[in-house]
Length: 114
Length: 115
Image (cartoon, rainbow over all chains, first blue to last red; front, side):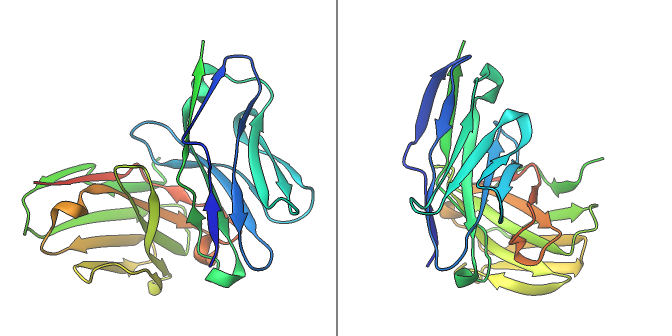
């Protein structure tokens, strides 16, 4: 069965510093990988996805993520964090072995301090 | 224009009651979903409909019954509410079947509190 893990409950970073939010996955076959962001009392918003092709994908608000097949990872990154990036971030995966259901990780809270 | 809208946004009710949450999307998508987010923010899929056909039905108590009158609407009815049903319920839609390559568009959520 497919699964996705976000090992950090919270990531703290100073404004202007680079940030990384980690995600690893487990699927049979080729994964489709996604990042979503949730602001307080709001629904999830799509940030970016990897389906095929270039391992480095760029998304909204200056975020990017790198697909690493050998490490089964899809870490979210941003070169320079903003206070407004503070939110809850979810990694998600879908694949053939679960009929392409989108399965979410447990979420990582990003706190960017001024 | 709100793409995916849910009503009500907040719902407080007593144990044993029956309640419904409504969802509508104006994106022209064929597929709609219900997700449950618990107090620890863990998000779990409950149901998915593609063009009014049920395609995903996770291990959810049969007190929960989805209904899709047309592809733009997916409602969730819950019978005999229990304390453990307290959560935020999110409706979502996608162009692709089961959301495998296309992103999901989420509503703002409906916070259900069972007393």
